[in-house]
Length: 102
Image (cartoon, rainbow, N blue to C red; front, side, top):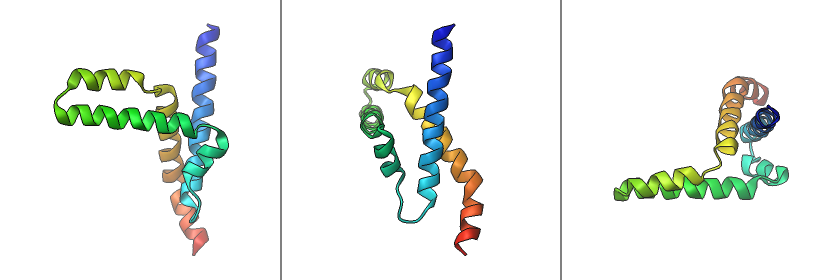
């Protein structure tokens, strides 16, 4: 039970990090990558992106077993909540930010 609670907390924290990264992406001149660096997840994020690129390369070459192996190594508990947080923030705040910039 405690492990399930910890998983939920980690997913929530990573979602919040994604929200911060998405908000930063909406501000001109600010990068979500900079926010990831400040939050201390930049290295883990790059390693996950590298693994995803490796998996796509394996698919292009027809090496589906290699793609599965690369996808198993991804930190899904980091990548998925970050992406959901980024997309949700961009969808919610894009109209607000554009009207503020005008």
